[in-house]
Image (cartoon, rainbow, N blue to C red; front, top):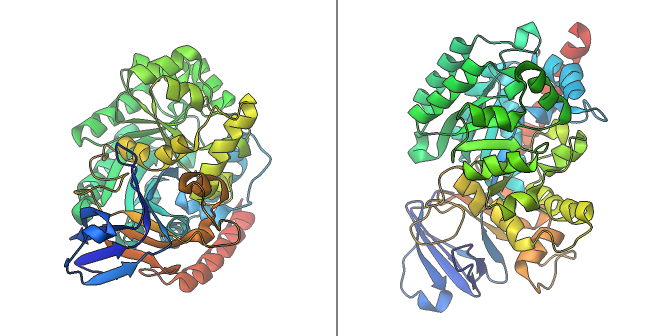
Length: 447
């Protein structure tokens, strides 16, 4: 698995660099986790490598960046459906959380990581609850995936056992930041993530922003996700989510507006002028009936839009390719305009825009010399993808996780020939099934 030097030869490289070059019969040399050379294969001569991967006839893309999920929800697939967001939270998700143990979260995170890797994801932003922090980031540390732990917390308008005093929530989050932020040569990061503005006081939101600024990390917040949570905040403050966050001075280039569905044109301009990042989760928004985020308008305003799968309890799985295709299709259908969303924009959201949201566009999101070697190799010689007229269109509209053959992070091979390397997949699936069954037993017994 681990190779100091790795040479990948013979594939078609979709670089996503500034020129958006596509290099046929290309080659990539990786040394100590970084791309040192990229170009035509015939330009590579006597380069020595500990390992050579023959990618002839295959396609090489930057790894996908899943900018929002809740990996513990792999244990809660199909637990709640056909409900609006707040009802979904109150009747199913919040009660289930009470019965989760640290070892449950650890297994869930490992299963979530496997699922992400299998769909070409090389970086995951995992939004967790306080008792889940350590288990989630430990699983990311052990698996080799690039990860961001978004430390979520509730303060008000939630059941008593989910509430957390603001100072305590921030103290715990800062302790985790000190332990893990920047670990594994920068592969792991941590950020504060008050769950929604309607579940936090003004003081908690402001102090969360101060904590993010102190460690130059992100502020990851569910923002304007559905009509009812926006209405709840309006009852409290007289303002909508974006208006309130703007008034508090919280919006900036490191702010993650997760969802950002229920917004006015004026609020979109606030987000754009602050250079905030929009994290689009189209499958989850459709699942809960939250609506369709105005992504074409965000793009026209110059917003950076990245993609997330959200948790499997509000979408079924972590299949990032499904999220890409759904993004392309839902906006075309909703607007009755097939030109409103281009495949090139979808791939940007999945790669370089995700890197920008993490402030890592100089390190990730494209295949260029000097960047981290986070990449995927696709075999498109399958019945549903054979013969490629346009590799990007083929990826977005036709490819499935079956096409993802090899996944590499920091030059380390996390999946090769569709075999997960750092994690025993069968063992994790067997254990996760047991954990999910025990969880449902505890849930049904205690309520």
